[in-house]
Image 1: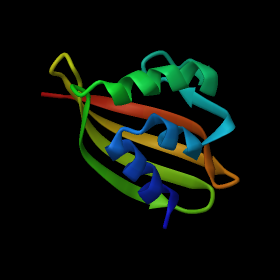
Image 2: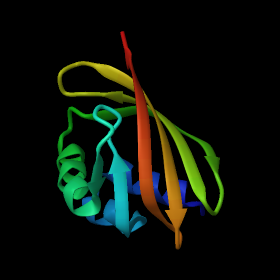
Image 3: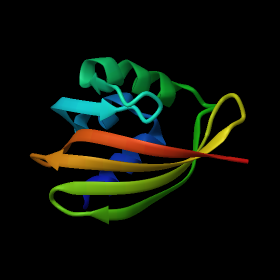
Image 4: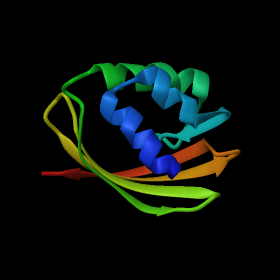
Length: 109
């Protein structure tokens, strides 16, 4: 089973402890809003709160491409404030885990 499939199963179950297993200890996330980097220790509490918020929904998810080095994903997200975004994410993989992610998002009406 590909990393994407296992990772998405964890996301769909909203199981933070399972989701976090797929991130490398040296993980960094580049925020598309500010182009700033966050380490796993900064990103994981945000991810945990996202998973705990039932009003945050992944309307659709698609693996565009995956190999041993990279995972490219396209999602449609619905946020608690009622807004929606199309999110394209490029995840770099190392040792079978996600070591870095960068996203781009387009607001949807």
